[in-house]
Length: 442
Image (cartoon, rainbow, N blue to C red):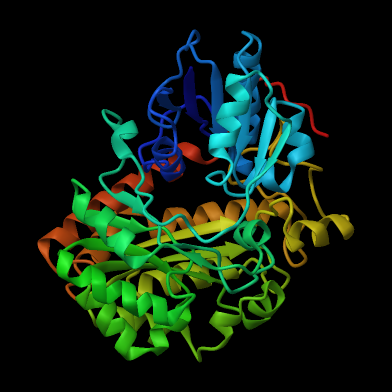
């Protein structure tokens, strides 16, 4: 039996910023030795028209759904069954089941051996629900599946899943609910020690959701001499001892979802962690003083946003010398409170933007309260261009406190900024899926 793991892209194009898809390394480690496994990742390689397999297993995000359905149709047209998992199939299983043979809802680890057994015997069920037990002890992702592929030189590693906050736009909370689950620290340390590269991205949506566990992890990681990046809620900046430990453990960059500079928006989206701090500038300064870079994300389109919000956010990001920044139109993901609210208010521009032939990447998907949809689309792209202008990149690179703290950090800063700049211009306005595509809206 041969299983083909498949990672669709937004469209049939290659990406310069793709990281290893960790889920497939996890599933590879759970696959019996007598099952042949291959990975095709459309972000970094084309998918041959005649790729052979007995089962295709793909992960689908909302942005890749249209392309995923086209690929599923190609394989099913040759008699190869397709199973899909990930956030989008979990949140919209009925839609996905119109295009594939089976859907996995939730995490796949708990049901993967049973699913493979069903596929071997030709009795694949339509729907599988992954249980949410404690994360498997002793499980180390098998990264041999990534050999020979051109990913970013940074290894994604996961400690825990879930987030204690419930932001109304977030698919993570819609997927996991309020549960928080963690791997044993010893397992994570063993995985980190075995990695060939020394740069790591701890991909937990909020590494500090459980501060006690985070301290245990940082203390265990510090002796490894790694350089790593993590995601955190901004309230970590209020804990000086945690920041000191974070810096000593090898963290060189913290990704923070600022989301908005306007309190009304933070209240509306339920971003409780951000509301707890008096201001963002001092929080950023406390992180940067310890030699760590800050990567900020912002969303635009909540009710308190007007056409002046884009310059406000770009000015903040440049003034605080953020190493990277994302300026995104608010995108309602199906299954989230935000999507349900906008649908109930009749403000969605498409019933399912991810399938709409007229939707383009970076485009507004709903009618904002205090600006037009055209202003939302243009304003986000303007902020991206301003922050990523070559002159602005150079000025931020000259920052010796964090971005240029040492030569390694400066090299990382420059590589990340040049890659980000290239991808911003390449993806803006990109049609999802195939030109002229299939995939009817529901």
